[in-house]
Length: 90
Image (cartoon, rainbow, N blue to C red; front, side):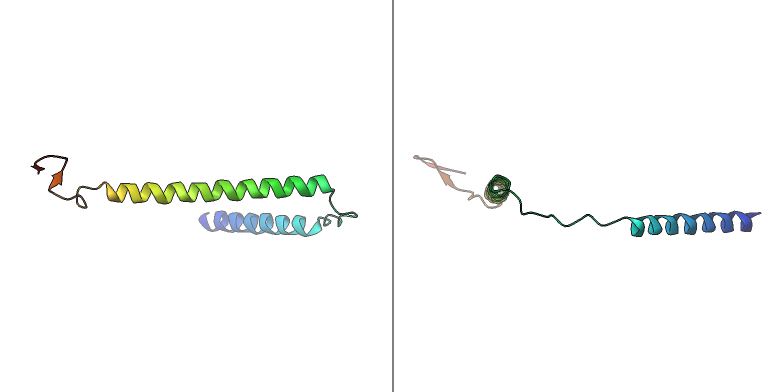
């Protein structure tokens, strides 16, 4: 009983995998573009690409600065004697 169930499950799995493999290879590849993209399309692509780089760089800079601030604010890095325009505190 258990052997039949295992064989049935395995055969269905193999059938399913082979069916998917056949469907992927049966698709016709998309045709090559016949003409280059328009100048407006190229301009929009350049602007969005530039904006993406600016945003990514800003996120990286913010993350780096926040890590530096967090490390600088730890009590282990702070001096035990802090002078605030008056007598020593600490």
